[in-house]
Length: 124
Image (tube, rainbow, N blue to C red; front, side):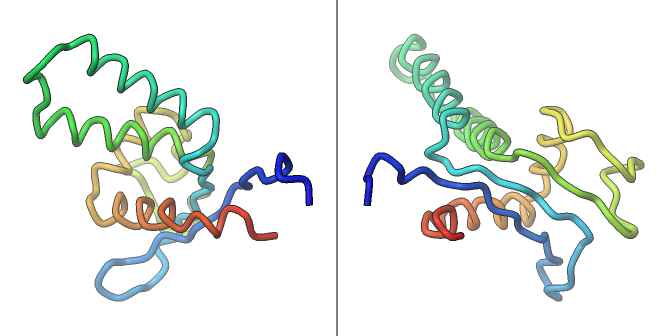
């Protein structure tokens, strides 16, 4: 096997209600945290932090950085049925809407959990 061919694929996850496990009608396509796009965001955040000097880390910055990384990992989504983002039944998959979706902690946790399953990105 050519080790240089070990590149992660994207995965799709169906978001579920945190209490019931019922599907929410949203499927999200994710790219690996090791993808070039996510790594570029990660490097930009690190460079910004390094330029900021000492004692500039706050809980808010850590949360913002986490949302930025999760957002960068979202490639696309499909809303179906009664699923809406605010009043929008077919929201565009853009940075602003990604941040809105990720502002729901139960959703952000599902996406973070899926991104943590590195093996899933190498399945067929």
